[in-house]
Image: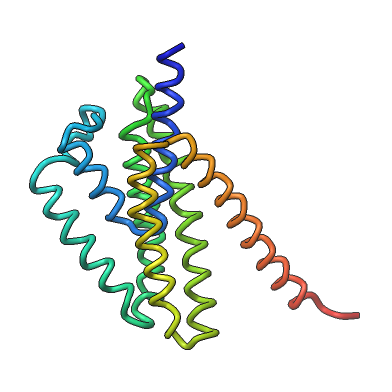
Length: 197
């Protein structure tokens, strides 16, 4: 019974950490690496490189650059096109690193679907939000969006280790909301394009 709870918590942690990569690609990976470095959590053996000094230095530098770049108007919109696939890769890595499945093939499949898919959805949602902000405020409101994303990435990553199941549920609700918004947007475009008879 205890193992089942641990397995559910670890899977929830993977989903929540992956979703945080949708806000910022490198910040959740840096948090995960530091948590592992201070031995507050142990990743599977093949992912212990996250806690090494070179990895933490690289992740720290990448985090600072990524955060700073999102405060530059219109560069932030350009970054969204790069961040979407990067977030999927980072989300896959983080989810796969904690999912407690012995079968490596199955672990990667779940990591890609749950981790990469979740990170991509969050990234798509934040990209749409920034695009809306760029259109309505001519980019001046994007700094507020960036600050919210930074806070969500850091707070979400830290809370994922403290209350993984709660965070996974919150992110699953966010996924549903983002999917509904994307579907609604595509339906609205389809209605506009439909020929009138």
